[in-house]
Image 1: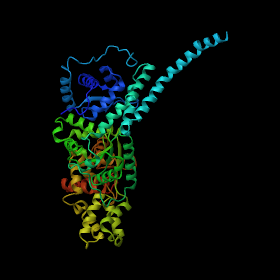
Image 2: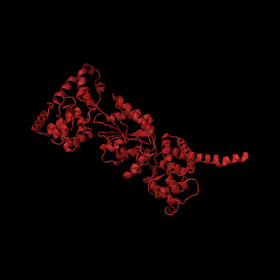
Image 3: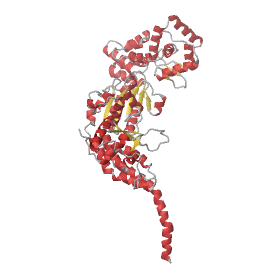
Image 4: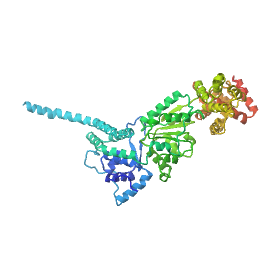
Length: 113
Length: 455
């Protein structure tokens, strides 16, 4: 059974981050870890969520102090298995091509500090 | 000379001013752009969700120009985002509303055709449900709390059906015996794909309803001790949830939820309820009907049972039934039926109380008050009956209040027993305590100026 959507390099990058990432993963963090612009990871996450590979939930915290909430993403049990398979298929070793979780500074507008 | 001066003014003053102005303006523009982009996503749920999510992410981008660039990124990816969302909504696994309603494991509860009264409650509740449908990203669980048989489930069903149009993605009912598996099946998950672990079930459930306008109606989920997944849906609902419960949610959960306490029917409503089954017999004995309604404390289930009893025996008069109820003081057994008895529901509540609280409830039935009238009491009377300190008595009262066996009166720190609860408690008192002991308690109350009702 195929994944049911087109798998691009960006999709693989995002899946790797979700597979290996630590802590609460939200859009900006995933984008940085995957080395992709923030705007581009949301369509991928939405697609994965729609297929049931990924689940998301709102950040919880003191409702009085929080402004807009972040949304945390996580692989579903199904998604975990399928993502591993896909990465083994498409990239020789999922371990070797693990993305840098603290990426080297990249030229560009976004992500600079 | 003039040209140089103009050039100087422009480069030295106007240009820096403009740049600084532009810099300040960037974050504002970025926020506006992202909000606008999120609103182009199509379905309202997605618009709302991504607007909040994107703004939260945008706010973390350092710098002013970088933020504007990030916003442009969101804008550039709008077509892809719309495709993803369309794809998600079109997934065959996401069942259509009709399929949801037709799901075999969780059929919607039938509406009562003889639903009467509760105008205010219906108005309040449908208002709450409509508001929840407007903002499905932040749903607070809505509780309907009340005594057994007071009509919580009927009201929930009624309002769910009335607001069906604002929940186009479906209406799902769970009963106290439903499990997370039932719910997943109802959401169209094939049996083979149901995860084994509780966590897996919980996540799949949330993924299935997230961002969809589904109303989940959970009938007394707190009776369902074996399914933690369903319990977790009450505390952190992924979609609008309407819960019926005999107990108020604990204080921590109350803050995050909406609680609608359902009381007895008023005189007019009680009469209308009797009329649905008795019709014109009510007009023949209007006073007896009012007495019957008072005797049953406006308790809808009890009224329904009594009306059913009379309807089955056309020769029996309402006056006769009232007299029988008053003379035998066996209100409960007089109208109980083996299938839906008030007694069964009371038994459940009573047996789940600690022994001391049960004892207090039994003895509270001695608190004076005319037969069908409410008798008020506080911690001092309770302490007297239990031969204990007022503090401990207050604690016991609180326990019973939380179980909805004792009702708070309008005055602070005063309480009252629903007439049906009092009758029930009195039966247990007669059964569990010796006649001498009961007489002692009566004397005790009398010495303190309280004259217990005679039985």
